[in-house]
Image 1 (tube, helix red, strand yellow):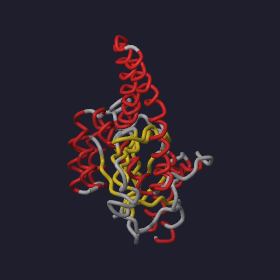
Image 2 (image 1 turned 180 degrees about the vertical axis):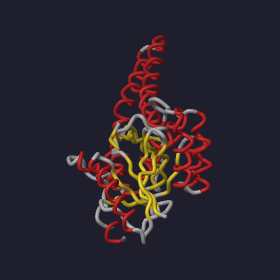
Image 3 (image 1 turned 30 degrees about the vertical axis):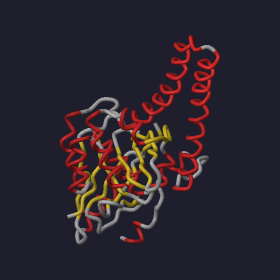
Image 4 (image 1 turned 45 degrees about the vertical axis):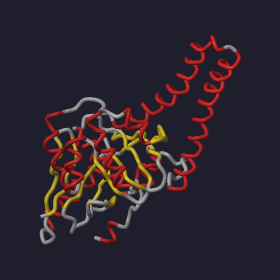
Length: 74
Length: 215
């Protein structure tokens, strides 16, 4: 089961869950994903414990897609 | 999935700082040399003034001592500013911290997870060196040299629990290391020992571990 989560003040919130075979759940996840991107979130897939990749489309096979806020120099 | 993952290889936040040159290993070496020259530029005159006073009038030693103190204190203040990037800032938002800690723990390996729980800093090995990532900044120990580069960088959501702030910076760093260093503000570059003295005691073992990992 794949998950779309957003880091927030509660730690993180699960926005959607889907499996590769469940098209309806995936479509709902895509909707949540696009909504979060429109709000300014950045989506990242943590591929290993050393690499992460920013994505603009929801990868169907990714186990975990994390939405984060932008960073800036302090 | 590979096509979707390949769509955006660089850090999105770079769009907000188009005027900055990429902070790569070459840039860091040059920056380090410039910082050393700059440090010499503001300490040597104070030392020279103190020595000159003692030669001209030994009884002026209190003034000479004050001059030497300036030569010591000013670099210490810069180092304090550098070490401060790792100090916790803002509200802690404790209620969400256990959940945030769980996610951050999943992102880290076993060794780094233990270190993060003890010190509050996430250690990350990367192409440019060893990073220590805190809630509002990061320190890089490049593979070459003995300097530490301190970067002030934070998430734009101040309401996040501490571990989520670290996770934000860690994910950005893993996405694009050079982009991460470019977006961040470079606040200090200098000797590791000087930064270590100014770190909170709880965080010093993380810097020691990073130094050991660099060797």
